[in-house]
Image (cartoon, rainbow, N blue to C red; front, side, top):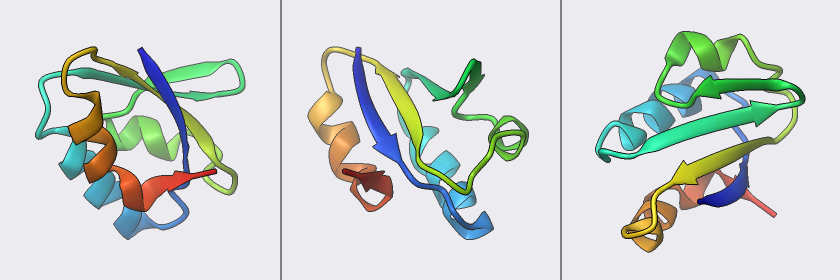
Length: 77
């Protein structure tokens, strides 16, 4: 599992983020405080506080580099 911090500070970013994730047959979780939601759920994402960065857990071992390349626009340091 790999964890990165992402920023989803607009509705358009959330929609394109979910579209990018659905290209992969992998589980993704967003963690904000004590809440863990499925990152492929638009409704779940909007239940989080999107004003600050969120942790994304990528449950994959094989294609992590490809996933990180596609998610690069959302990743923050």
